[in-house]
Amino acid sequence: MSMLELRDVRGPSALGGGWRRALDLLVLISVTEFRRSYLGTALGYLLSIARPLLLFAVLLTVFTQAFDLGDRVHQYPVLLLFNIVLFGFFQEATSQAVNSIVNQESVVRKTQFPRLVIPLAVVLTSVFNLGVNLVVVFAFLLAFGVAPMWTWLLLPLLLLALFALTTAVATILAALYPRFRDTAIIWGVTATALFYATPVLYPLDVVSGTLRDIISLNPLTPLFVLARKWVVDPAAPGPELWLVPAVAFVVLCVLAVWIFNREAPRIAEEL
Image 1: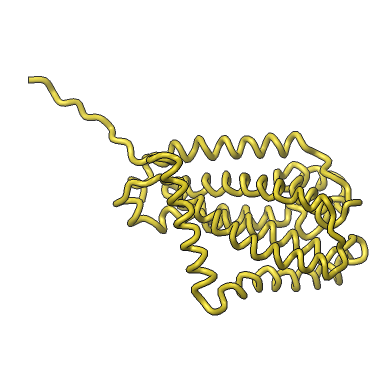
Image 2 (image 1 turned 90 degrees about the vertical axis):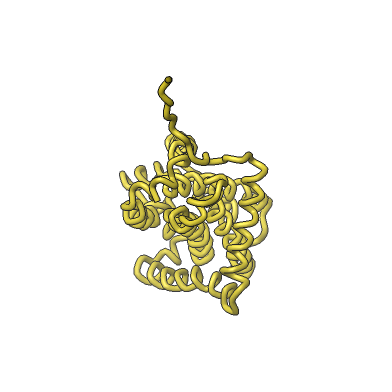
């Protein structure tokens, strides 16, 4: 009598069930979550706008009074608000994605569906919030006398690149957290460091020396430099370094695909 051979049974993959099913689930979860968070409460919409505006008010007071950036940087108030909204999207999406799969533990254990949908839904929900905040940003731009420019039409390219980078980081964090629970703490510290290591509170050209070179290596830096030039101040200098940030961008995207494909089948076991 032959011995029965035991084989490993792999769990659902990152996109198990096909792209069409994954896309349908992604849209459904994202829209439902956005409605629950912002349309299901009386103050949901107002609070989504109030958060970046409150942070903007505090930082504007500090950096115009203590560091005199208001006089040194053209249209500094609207530049600061614009940067806060962009980085806020990155930070919100990645931070909420960290434990997104664990938060859906009951669904992950019992249901066969593409695992990648969970962190992607978090990012897409943050995209909806970003769209709401950008309406406020452009209202401020016009109120502060920034004339519409043809380069505003290039903004979707920047947002697409920011979305891709945010999605890559979010999927890496979401895939690692079920196995390595310290991921949340580490990313919390890293995200705070990135906030100061990205030209959010200041334009890159006011930084000098080695620190400027280090900040230029950040894959987020070229996006914020171009956002300033294309939307706020066309006379502002463009990115100084392209190669290293571009390589880092590509590496993060490839790493995200590899890590999630490796971790997705065993996620239920780690919960």
